[in-house]
Image (cartoon, rainbow, N blue to C red; front, side, top):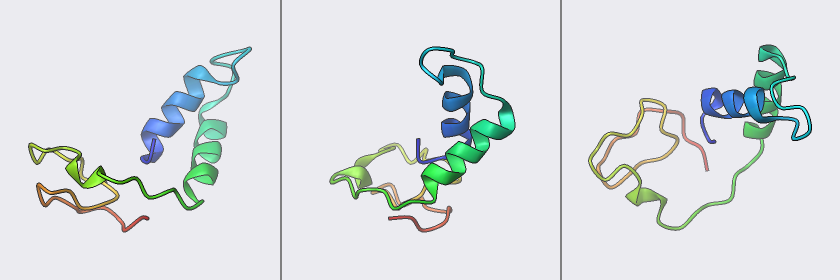
Length: 74
């Protein structure tokens, strides 16, 4: 959920809990942007994500596979 497209898609089709799918595209992106604008807790071991070097272009942190092209986020 650290990526805006993934967060917005989840919000769009799964929220609110009592009426999934009732949130529009723009509302979903607005909520996702709000959530992602806040600091995230640092998770130990996240550098082991994507061990095969297939991290997405917008990965928010460096992995042991060495790929990091996205903005720095902590």
